[in-house]
Picture 1 (cartoon, rainbow, N blue to C red):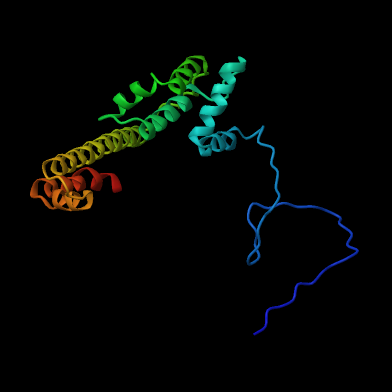
Picture 2: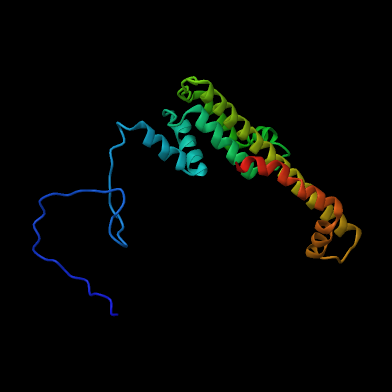
Length: 204
């Protein structure tokens, strides 16, 4: 079956222009749409959340340098700082990585901006006992994820240390061979198997 040729329409008279969030036709793409978010703060906050952490740091540094208002809340900046610390700093725990990041040039500027930034809007207290339990569960899961991430870093650090020690003790051994031998050892196998203890409860 041959594909249809595109039909070119000329001399059209447009009586109205509508916009949609998602096209209904097959293969339809929305290539231009503009929306006023001034009366929808929730959507504006979602756009901030999607912003790359590196871009948030750049915008914040520019605001500090020019003396402009910080366009993010203190909680937003803390979250970004922790993500940058986890990515850039080598440390056993999230707290250690955060502290080291605050000693770096970007970290010092971000810490200064966090002190100037407005606090985040406080969430309303739980209305029911179920809501309170759900909030506590979310807080517990967040802490458990952080602890699991820290443990994963510590395990990977211990494995890399064993690989370096083995290569030092056996000159000429390649890194691939040393890694294979270390990861096959019972001690490392047991350590890696223990990850499921921390990960499985977080999957629900």
